[in-house]
Length: 242
Image 1: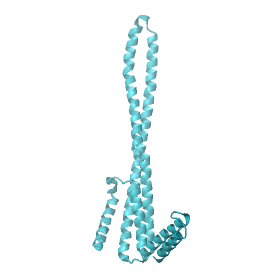
Image 2 (image 1 turned 90 degrees about the vertical axis):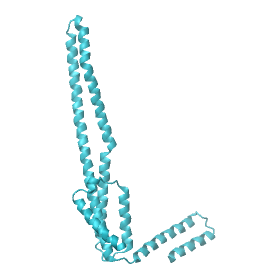
Image 3 (image 1 turned 60 degrees about the vertical axis):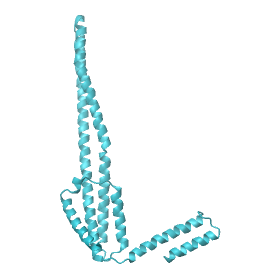
Image 4 (image 1 turned 180 degrees about the vertical axis):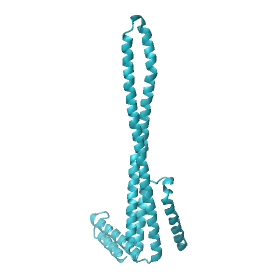
C-alpha cells in the first residue's frame, strides 16, 4: 500500500502547484491511484493462505454446479426450439387450410351466382335470397378462422420462443466455458484467494445475466443426481466453515 500513499502524495503536490481539481493532470494522478489500490488489493489476496484441500473441494463443487447449469440451459433451449417449431408448423398448416377454405368458398359462390343467372326472371328474387342465406354463415366462419390465425401469430410473437431459446443457449455456453476454466484451475498445485475470487465473480455474473430454467428441467434425470452430489459437498464445506 506504500505505492498508493506515494501516488496520493504526488496528486496532492500536483494540486498545490496549480493543477486544478478535475484538470487533466489531477485526473491522471487519481486514475493512477485507483489502479494502484486495485493491484495492491489483488496482491494481498494472493498472499492469503487458504487450505488447499478445502479449495479443491470448492472447485469441485463449482465444477458440478456449472455442469448442471450448462446441461439444464441446453435442455431448456432445445425445449423452446421444439415448441417454436411446433407453433410454426401449426400456423403454416392452418394458413394453408384457410387459403384452401377461402378458395373453395369463392368457387362455390361463383357457381351459385352462375346458376342463379340462368333462372327465370320470376324466380330471381327468391333464388337471390336463398343464395345470400347460403353464403352468409360461411362468410362469418371465414372471418372467425382468419381472426383465429391472427391470434395464433400474436401469441407466438408474445411468447418469444426464438429469443428465449437463444438466451438459454448462450447461458449454456457460458457455464460450459466456466466449467472448463475451473477444470484448468484444478490442475494447479497451489490455490490462492485471487483465483477463487476471480471464479466467484465470473460465476455470479453469469447467474445474474441469464434467465432461470424450469424446475422440471433443473431436477430432471441425471441433473437430479448431480444435485445430490452438490448438496453433499455443500454440507461438507458448511461444516468446515462452522
